[in-house]
Every structure is written in structure tokens, then in C-alpha cells.
Amino acid sequence: MIDISESVMQFLLALIVVGPLIGAVAALLPAPPGLRGTSPDQAVLRHGVTVTGAILIAAVVLALGFDHDQPSKMQATTDISWIAALDVRIHLGVDGISLPLLVLTALLTFLCALYSYFKMPMGPSPKGFVALLLVLESGTLATFAVLDLVLFFLAFEMVLIPMYFLIARWGGSEGVTGGRQAAAWKFILYTLLGSVVMLLGLLLIGLNAGTFDMVALATDNGRGLSTSVQLIAVLAIGLGLAVKTPMWPLHSWLPDAHTAAPTVGSVLLAGVLLKMGTYGFVRIILPIAPDGMRTFAPYLAAFAVVGIIYGSLACLALAKQGAGGDLKRLIAYSSVGHMGFVLLGIATMTPTGVNGALFANIAHGLITGLLFFLVGAVKERYGSADLDTLAGATGAALYGRAPRLGGLLAFAAVASLGLPGLAGFWGEMLAMFGAFNPAEGLSRPAFLTFMVIAGFGTLLTAAYLLIVVRRVCMGAQPQEAPREAPQAGAPQAGLAEPARFTDVQTYEFAAWTPLVALTVLAGLWPAVLLGLTDPAVQKLLAGGKS
Image 1 (cartoon, rainbow, N blue to C red):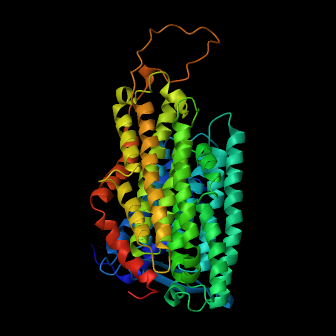
Image 2 (image 1 turned 120 degrees about the horizontal axis):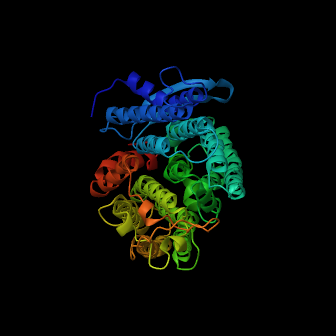
Image 3 (image 1 turned 90 degrees about the vertical axis):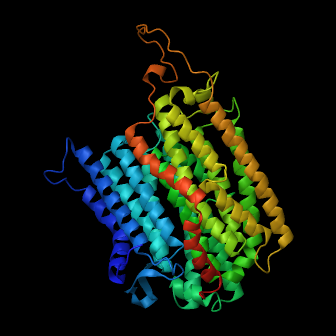
């Protein structure tokens, strides 16, 4: 690691949060001479790659300058008074919990911008697309960096509008405008209603404790809040966070949003936006209202394991032959199950479980982000993500037609099902270990039951993902039919012609290789991530004491 002064670290964190906003404004302005390229569209897309690349470099430098000997300590902190009457402060900082999420967000946004430079989704002007992408990045990064409850809420809400427009204007394909508009409205209504309830809980904590500072509240560990205030706050804040996570049964906006969203929208929605909900549970509810959390923890765990089973059964139903299941929709339902493991780990209120939840968060961002990239590529080549259309009579035969694409899809699937040696394994295992021996005051028999149910969910997860690999990747390779001049008005085949089918292209390799490499690295060397999160989690659960 490198030695960087505290003032430079503060500047880097401020740049990471504010930089994308400045870039979003610049994206709407005319490109200066010399940077216009062959067209204004190319110039603004290049601008998006440049800004997100600069933010990623800043995040990597911040991670290298981070004091890894003290990951439980808030570093690169800025604390400036903003609204003195309410004691609301611009308070920024990172520790071992938030740093991996900052780097993950910066990485995924850069890869999405790079992918869009070569494969811009169909829709209005790229100017609006790039500006919305950068606003979305700024809001997500701010959520993981702010240490004030009011600022957390503002950052949490900041991502809604850009994601709404990405789904409504650039989502789906021609002819499905109604579907994408409905999905966008469902997304924003669910999340806005959840956020209103969450705001009431945040205000209740801040006004009763006399401060909105998350570090001070975590150090106090609920001692300044009565049990009834904690119960109401956990219920209100938990509902808002559960919608964003999403927790069963508040998940129904997610499959529609993913199915309608453009590829990069799905990557960011699954890769980073869902993490905002689970991060809120760890950063706010666990340390600030521990007594209220202890009361609701068994219910949270119960909803989590129902979500694991429900998500897996929904995926099995979609994967079944003749069900007409959409591959993007299936991956979306798989997120409900995977985030169930994250919530189960948090509900155990143990260092093992919470570390597992944070690890599963990062693993899900890497693996599901890769899966949505791959499904988008398959849909682009076939013109459809319908599983029955893809599989046809003998299977889509990706192994024969596009071996690299087929191999990557199979890799992402086995990583998602939790194969040992890949990132998906450790988080789910640690979450179940946490359920085996939950925190003091929680019913061990109940959590042992939850652990068994979650273990059964891993079998169902393996079943549906292997069915998907068999149906999409295997099968007899279609033979190229003799070429004849098509008759006027003749219907076109549903699938792309074999001769025109392309394997993974260079820009796709560039966008996907980092996710593959990090999935393997996190699976083989989990100590890199756990070494960051564990001291911070221990301090958080101990009431601010290392």
C-alpha cells in the first residue's frame, strides 16, 4: 500500500462523490474543439468513459492509501456544518465496510460506460444517457460515503430519478414502450413509498438522540434511545431499506425493472443499487438501534429464507421447458434469493453473519453484474431473451456457436450457485454459519431452522442455474441452410442466422474480464475482503469500541 496524507485522502473521497455530478453537467454542454471525434454522440460517450475512468482511478488510489492496519477507523473524513439549526453536517468518511462498496460501484459504472461506448442502448440522445449514468454513480457513491442520516437519505433518493429514466427511455426494445414505462413507474413508486417511511424513522432517531451523526449514534449504541423509539425506528427504516434490497414480499418491482432495463441499467441495478438497502441495515440499524433490531431479527431472518426459497422456485418455474421464461427475468428473481442470504447474515447479529452478508454483497455485485452483461449479449445476438426461443428444439448450442460466450455464461452460473473457489461461496457459507450460532438473546432453534431452509435453497439455486446452462449452452449446433433469396414479405426466422452469429468481441472482453478475475480472486483469497470488513464489523457490533 502507499502512504498518502490525510488531506489528499479527503480530497480523493470528495472527488469520488462530487466528480460524477460535475461530469454530468459537462456531458450536457457542447464538446470543446478537438474532443468531438467523428460525431457529437461519440464525443459524449467518450466523455462518460473518461469521467467514470477517472473516478475509478481515484477510488483505487483511495483504497491503496487506506490504512489497512486500522480498517475499523473512519478515514478520509470531512466534517463541515451544513444546516446548523438541525445540526446536519456534510460528514464523509470510509472504513472497511464502505470501501469495498465504493470501489465496486466505481468499477461497475466504468465498465458500463465502456460497454455503452461500443454498444449504446437504443433510445434518445446519448447526452441524456451519459448524464443520467453519472448522476446515478454520484448518488450511489455518496450513499456509501456519507456519515449523516439526512445526507444518507438524500443520497439514497438521488438514484431514483436517473434509474427511472434509464428504464423508461432506454429500456426494452422497439414495440415494448408500454412495458418499460410501467416497469419504471412500479420501480419509482415502490422505492419512493419505502423511502417516505424510512425518512420518518431517520427523523425519529435524529430528533430523539439530538444528532444525525452516524458515527456518534453508532458509538452511543442505542443508549440514548428508548426501546419503543428503537422498535418504531427499526420498523420504519427497515421497511424502506427492505424495498430497495429487495426483501420478499416487497420485491415485485425488481423482475419488471430488470426485464425492461437496458443491459447497463440491469448491471447497475443488481450490482450496486440493491447494496444500498443492505448497507443501510449494517451501517444504521445494527449499531444505532440494537435492541429494536434484536426484536425484529427473527422476523427479518424468516422473510430472508422465504425469499431464498421463493426466488429459487420462481427461477425453476421460469427455466422449465414451455414456460416461456425470460432469461433476464430469471436472473432478477435469482437476486431475490441471493439477497436473502445477505439479510439472513445481518439478522444473526454476529460478526460471522454480518461479515458473510458484506462478502455476499460484493460477490453478488460481481457475479450478477457479469450475468446481466452476458444475458444482454445473448439477447443482442438472438434478438430475444426468451428461454424457449433460445433453446429451440435442440438447445441454443452456445458452446458450439460461440464457445467463449458459452464458457463465460457457464462460469457465471456456477459462480452464482456458490461453487467453492469462487466468490459466491464464502458469503452464503458465512451467513449460514452465523445462523448456526446467532447473537445472544436470539432463539437458536429458530435460526437453526432458518439455516436448514437456506441450505435447501442452495440446492434449488444449483438446480435452476444448471438447467439454464444445459438449455442455453448445450445442444446440437444448427447447420447453415443453403442461402436463397428471400421472397418479398417472407417472415424472418426468430433466431439469428448461424453465419452471422459472433463470439465475444474485444470490447466485451474488456468489460467482462475484470469481473471474472475478481470473482476468482475473491473466491481463492477471501481474506483480502474479510480482512477489511471484520475489524469494522467487530467495532460496529461492540458499540464503537474496537
